[in-house]
Length: 329
Length: 187
Image 1 (cartoon, chains in turn brown, purple):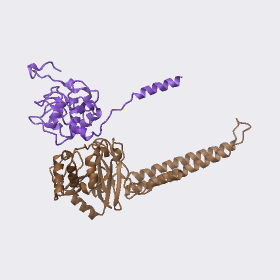
Image 2 (cartoon, one colour):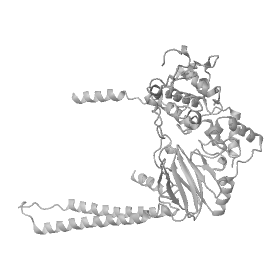
Image 3 (spheres, chains in turn green, blue):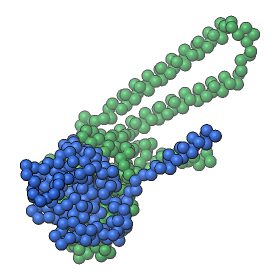
Image 4 (tube, helix red, strand yellow):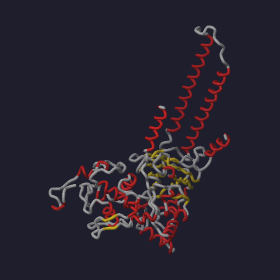
């Protein structure tokens, strides 16, 4: 039973969402702080347990004259208490100093190479990339691509309630508060996919509000950004074109935007390149034509209470609209 | 003896705790049936479908639906013409006067089919359930007496009394002369 429990604890050691499997600079310093505090506190705890067990084992003899103090014992007691208090003060001061010097550099880097604005909504992440000219900015959702080895400044703001941005392999948590912009700097050293999730309870689907930070080499990132900037791919096949018609004539276009079409809704995620994202519905399902169809057909069963309504579609419409969205790479 | 009486009292008190039912997902046939209102020929008022009563009138006094309606009020740009209910380009909800009556069916038909002089039709932009939620919220803004349920509170600054204080009753404005002399007693 104990072995099973300890094995369960060890599952946090590796993976794409692990505080102990760190791949980026703020998380690396935080991990060092975690290890230091855990080790020191474990040693202190062990010493205290040893002292307690020894004290319970070695019972004192009964005093014949209880009201007269034994000077030797009193001196030793005083020395022990003074040493314990001094050790506590030293350890706590050391923790304070270490913690301060570790974390005060984590808030914002002096130089950043890329700025991304992340807005938290119930229950998805709106990601906006800036560029030198306003017509080159683009929006995406639930997926943040960053180049490796560069500081990326994230400007965080909540739009309805307080959320929290937490990608443990790369950085600590930072809240997204309505009306108060926060900043977080992340930096990935190695390419990879790092999962993050909302870390501040925000409503019915807080548990299903995940996102992905995908770190890539600089040329790959530049290519991705260039493709994202472009409008949606024009439908070539018949079924895909029919799907586009369904999308534009149904309530879909009222909430979602697909650049290059007349759909310009801003209350839901931008779907211009939804087929190219790894996951949909904030990390709920892997992006395939089937999962898109399942999500569109009945979002309230998959993520009950979320703000996407169940739009009535018949089978042909569902098939074609899922083909259309899967083609938007 | 005293313990069992205390336990009985606690049991009686807690048995009455019943959370409001939230319909997060309407069955598709039910949602389709809710669209089939029976409108009067002049498109003013009518009867809701039977399903509406079978569901126990879910959009009038269910706080979850009213809150969703409040969200939809911002989402679908109602504020551009009606602002926070005080009107502008579009008529006000807060002055207590309804062009087509305060019934749910009239408001639903206004939103779904549009009205003359500029109200667009939202039947292709929102689902039936969303239109009902929005209609319930609009009715709350203009209600003459406060409903038993209230939508959630404002995220932005308050510009008028909130919905649970029946703002239309507070801000009711008869105007210098009644609109129609035979309109009857003021609400």
